Every structure is written in structure tokens, then in C-alpha cells.
Image 1: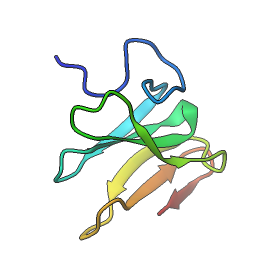
Image 2: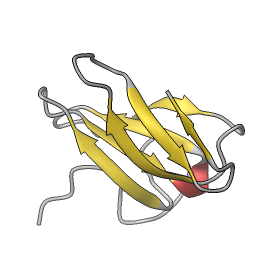
Image 3: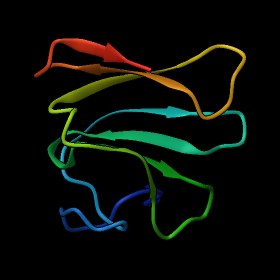
Length: 88
């Protein structure tokens, strides 16, 4: 396969993921990835060499699932296993 997000090493840099648990691909082929061990959600544009954090917070502690908000762009629902909550 072809590497489209992350790298061959784990970590917290914009080029890395550590604990990806879910992903969503939008109509523009952007990939949204929950990166649970880094407490963030990353957006990777097509052909990007690094991701952009769209949620990066110590408030989330166990991001597990990601679901797009219908009829919107750049909005997602995020489930947090540790905090037992759903965020928008």
C-alpha cells in the first residue's frame, strides 16, 4: 500500500501519529484521523507530507470515533472513551 498519513515511526510531530483509532475521508479527499495517544484530531490534505491539528487539547483523553456532521465542512463529532463524552 501507499502511505497517505503518518510515518513509519510513532510520535507527536505533525508528520507522525501515535494511536490512530478512527478516520473519515471527506468529499475533497481530506483525511481526518483521531490520534488518541496524542489527544488530537489531525486533518491530512491529499498528497500532504504533514497533518494539521484541528482538535489538539488536553480536554480530550481517549478519542476513539469520528463522524462527520451532515451538510457541513470541517465539523465532526468526536467520541471520547476516557471522558465518556461526545464533542462537536
